[in-house]
Length: 197
Length: 399
Image 1 (cartoon, each protein chain N blue to C red):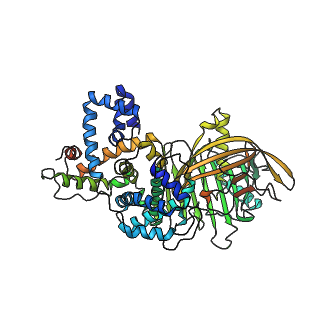
Image 2 (cartoon, chains in turn cyan, purple):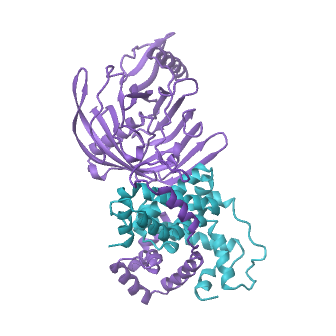
Image 3 (cartoon, each protein chain N blue to C red):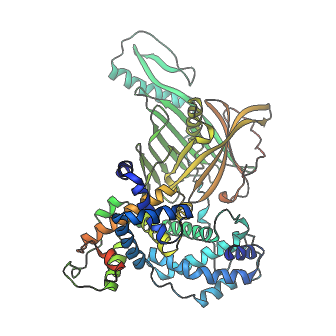
């Protein structure tokens, strides 16, 4: 049995020890997920606490139809949407790609294509460019690579279907390369990073 | 999306399909069959090998250092849950589970809209139409029934009003408490544009400023094209609207100091719902009936449910259709019951529609359930038809 499921069952019975273990497993994951999205460490911590509190309160409703991680991250994702609305930051969260056209992040003037940069610099460039993607595109990338979830699990969390998840990933990467180019990069940075730049 | 589909159609050997699987091949979550197909394809496809290199670069950039566990936060969390059952809605001290997931009952408006007042308005509109259309004096008619096309003679002109399809009043109950009253009119104008308008009064919070008014325009097949609701009952603002095209919907929520919007792709027949705007279920009921009449299987009916007030989008499925009975002081009423399941970011909501005919929806019921966060089920019924009330059904969710 998935050890997280076992822990959730313990939490459902009111076991504080199982809750502590589950918290130890998920607090860093959730914190990382939130921080990448809202760049506000304090708010990210609060979201982690609220998410884990819901896990405590609602563990009895977990029915095993999905993995425990999908269930917990799904709660986190919904908390994030809710927070964004409540904090009036939904504008950022729900900006469409067209909206982003007029809100491009200013390019680093030193980041021209002729500049010699190392792998870490390239990764920083990519991370900054990621901020220019729509929330939905970023979420798919982060849930895939940061959280290691399958496309079906991501679809469940984002309340959509697998085809949409795949197409969002496809367009996210396409758009990411466009943003890198707009920031004066060559467009082959992802390839360079993979080769150790 | 269209160009993506186009490429998929044109490229042989499932190349595009494999290309789309690469991120999950890389993170190790593909099933065995897909993994084998990707491995096989990679041996022969330079494009996909390059793509996977780029995906590895993206993965490296995204895989930042995971922060360490915060012992302080852990202790806070443990302190919050200590000694409290894991199943209850226990009060928290330091940590508070915010109730923002609750369904937003913004309750709406209602002008005291008597039929006589309606007639005055019809008359005014009719005079205008009659004038601009240049109808000659002649035939006559009287608007006697909402389903008939109204016509009358005014100053020697035949005046053609609008075709009324339905009008009435919904009373919404939460347990034994009446919380809202909504008067609605569904009409069709000369251009076959359908218009659902309503005014809502919050009974629960009566007084000035506790109203809202709604205008929903639809094509002749009940597909919404625009939506506007304004008033103080609009959740966290005073205006919510939606522009809906064939493929996309833009939802806009405007308040005093915020202007939020969300564009979504429609993947099903669009409908609108806000759970205090019961007349919108008139539209949903008609869409379902229309599709069933056209031979669409019940389990194939998929509606894209838009809620501009909350910028929420969900999927609505028809779960079942059966015969059910409602009780009123006047006797038992036989109805057709449509059970619906709505899934959105806010969770799952189970809804029942009760209709006495294909055009006469008489009640909407949402049993008590987790996503409602209410102490009782929500029951709305046509109080103009059942003046002595209807008894709330006894269904439980999930059905």
